[in-house]
Length: 417
Ligand SMILES: Cc1ncc(COP(=O)(O)O)c(C=O)c1O
Image 1: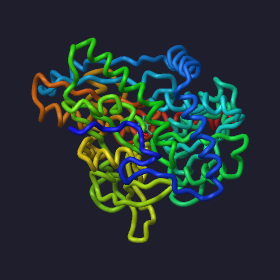
Image 2: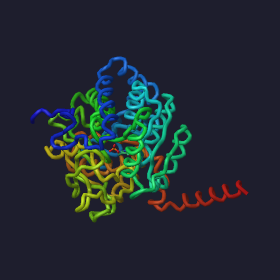
Image 3: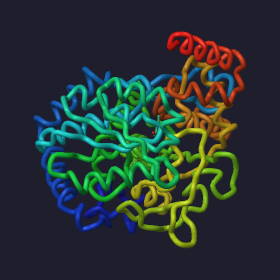
């Protein structure tokens, strides 16, 4: 296998990536590029970042042998990297802390961010509270309705959550709104992008701040087993948890890398968000070239997933490239398969995985059966699923939960009389 470059070449991974932006955003991106490459090689910056990851985020996160699930499935050994145990419940905090710290060094006072599932917004609001920065989060109206608990916590952290009412009112519209705001307020504001997407240097920067996941995993697994795993599996929205998990293994040829997209309700247009496992095609959207679910005119198509974090119509340029050269394999899992996997790992392992991460768990059940015994799979459980309780309980038709909600509403009404 030819050596794979982990960093981009001037912002490009093969033909994907780049910086296709309006002139007005250029100074902000050039300033960011310069600062990022200065600080990412600066010992003091890295020491400060690592100290926050250790003392505030709670790293390293555990690597757990899922022995009950492994026994029940009867195939390969399954290990779980538990990113959900990081502060705020998902991997998003690794990147949020890194960029917020960088913004502070750049003299910025204010952070803006987009969010889909709310996990990145939550992580950003948390990082800003900790580092003393002003924070505004752009969030699609539909996502606000789906992820109300995260909105509540963001506001508690002191962030202002701004509903985005344009387009499909989901993540892609939140990204557009944040980019517009950044163009107007770049002097005092940093746009803290939450996935490995967008114009250069964001895909490189987000990967660097998330690559702690893969580095830790490799060390932990080598200490446990004295060898490398056979397969890594991660869910893929924009691609930050997966590329962070895979980066340190890209040149370990014997380790298969599998990305899992949202198979949603089926294969029809608008029913899923499978770009690589589905019919994504090359386009330039939101400042970068990659694979997108788009119509004949290049307009992004509506998408669907049970998980708010996986329903983005684009994918990070590095993953598009790694798929093209055959280094990362892609598959998708449907909403129903995801719910089954979610329940299975809760019962067998006592883990409440995020619905996003449950896509990877669902794929791991199939892969464990295919690979067979004496092989090792590590799944990145990118987040925990407490945030999803309204969707999960409703999807599982929990009567007791509906009763509880009715009683809760009655209690509120009583109080406000
Ligand atoms: C827990 C969790 N996992 C995965 C994702 C998908 O994002 P990414 O592909 O950038 O990791 C999200 C997005 O919000 C998330 O909240």
